[in-house]
Length: 156
Image (cartoon, rainbow, N blue to C red; front, side, top):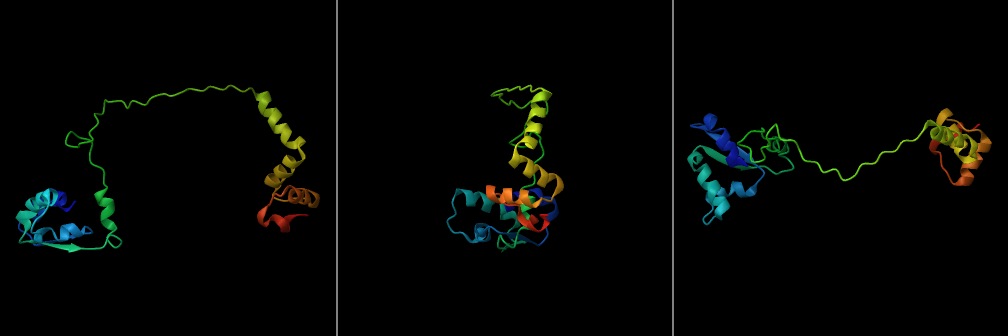
């Protein structure tokens, strides 16, 4: 928020004429409000000392993208930060379940060999390995309703 920026940069702004460029239309009309709500009244009081030296300029949010990154800059992890977390605090992550599976190598060998034994899987494996298909395998793919993109011209 502009008021926070003015507070942080007070040392540099005191006694200078400057411009506040914001995408918030409410801040633009802040100094001229006759009956502000509580929130706006706090802002008015916060910027009162800059009233003679400051000009507030509105810049549309679509054009004013450079400030978004600055406004989302993370605060340091110290006691002044409302979201302060001590360094020695460990996050408490609940463990909802543990699953352990031990498969022996014969299982993986059976899966690997089944790819070559099944006609359709062997066709797809050959396509993936070589990048080319023989014509009878291309027909088998089309019968299965499988497409193989721009590889039609590579069928031999």
